[in-house]
Length: 40
Image (cartoon, rainbow, N blue to C red; front, side, top):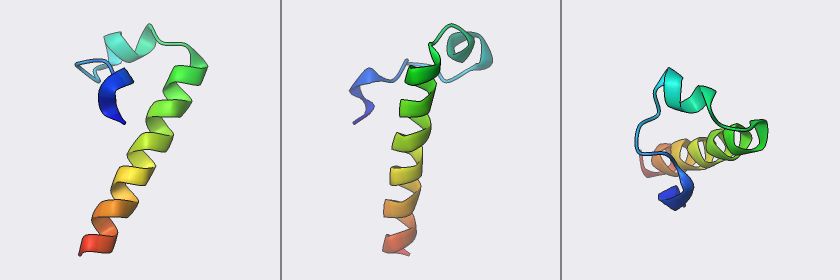
């Protein structure tokens, strides 16, 4: 899942990504958050 993410998720790095890449990151983070919430 995280293989396509940039090494650093800072403003400068994220600013260089295409909208589709940013949407993918948001979706992956939402899935990760949901997975963590289910463990609690």
